[in-house]
Image (cartoon, rainbow, N blue to C red):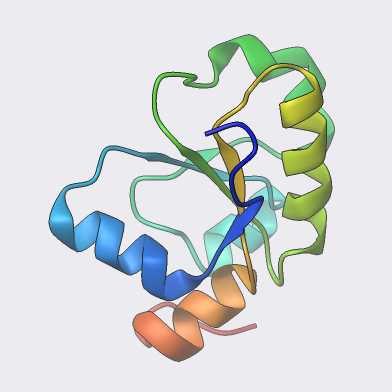
Length: 109
């Protein structure tokens, strides 16, 4: 996936999930944010903990990184790619876009 898109939109992620496309979701928001609006099945690792926990992250499937609106997760995506996690992609719009466009049961905040 190196050289491919750095970001995907929520429609693409929804299609991956519906179609059984192998992937993992990394939620880099703070614990209080995850408590307000969790993303089902995501690995929750706050942004500040990523450097210490990078070895825990899957590298064999696309790793979709999300935050509230997409700016923190974009920074993490760039960092992960620089560390060799070639399949890391940012979720453009974050959990906010997921809530408004895909799953309104996820609370907006």
